[in-house]
Length: 226
Length: 226
Image (cartoon, rainbow over all chains, first blue to last red; front, side, top):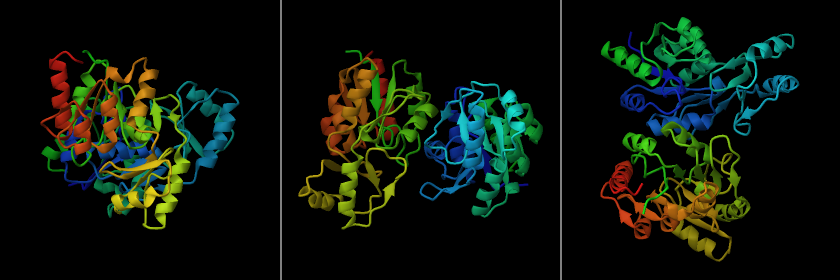
């Protein structure tokens, strides 16, 4: 099987632990002659800045699937689920002193500083039946629509690129990468990945963080699979 | 003279011609043990994404001095000159079919696609006495306050960092870097720089783009000046 594109997470997957770009991974991604899509829980501006600085085509899945862009100067495709997330945020604010990341820039979900017990918050939310889920990407705790994830984002962007999710290799490290890794043609978790994402993956690399992604891509290339 | 910090432009200065990050420059900036401030005509989100991906401290001068941030999770200092820029934009819109970059994200100035004659636009604006200037950074044409530039940004951020502009080495390539380069303790233009920025600089590198910045920093380091 020869794959036609790669989709991969940014933080923890093509970076070092401190979120600094792994420069070997950046160089390698730039040299690939298939499209490389960045998929992140971060905002679209961050995702497109990373794509521009690495030298990619600007196709990004941002806000965990809520915002999709197929190039640098194209209109974003934005889901309309922020209202439900805001309701859950107001509810949780009765119990915790919550602080939002990028409140002015997030269009579809809410990202919070990791200063509260997510497990306990999930229990509190369970009875409320908001159409949301709450996930920890290790960089932030996200309140997001339970109808949207990086896999739904991949479905949308792959169609716009004339592809399907099975044409993609997906690489990631966090719980929010698991659906995307399952729906791609081939899914890879880097060694620093969560148990959940490792379980979802076809392969787990020996190396961690950006080194893991370099290992994965070099392996796929040596096998003629990309 | 030993300098205490570096301030440098992003596009054309630490990138290749296509705006891709120069990975040698990125590596070198990360290894410096003095603060590195990024100063750009781009929006603050882009500037902070670049700082994060390079592994810097998040001090940025964005929108050509209109927006200042001293770290990743600090409140931005935002100038209030967008109204005057908007008046000039409305005036020019009578003559040209103008397209804004990042209209939702720019807080203090207007950036336009370079599809009109800037020289002619300047002539048209001359009689109007708006408190603005119009500059070409080679990536966009900016309508900006004539009271703000990267040098006024450097004055503000240096004070917040407990420094003064003369404590800084400044590196840049475009007309919008000239004031900053003049006000810094030592100003360097990379070889691809405009005539104006080269004239303002104390030194011009032999190499262009990111290679020029690597040359400049290695030279300063070899002389013990940083």
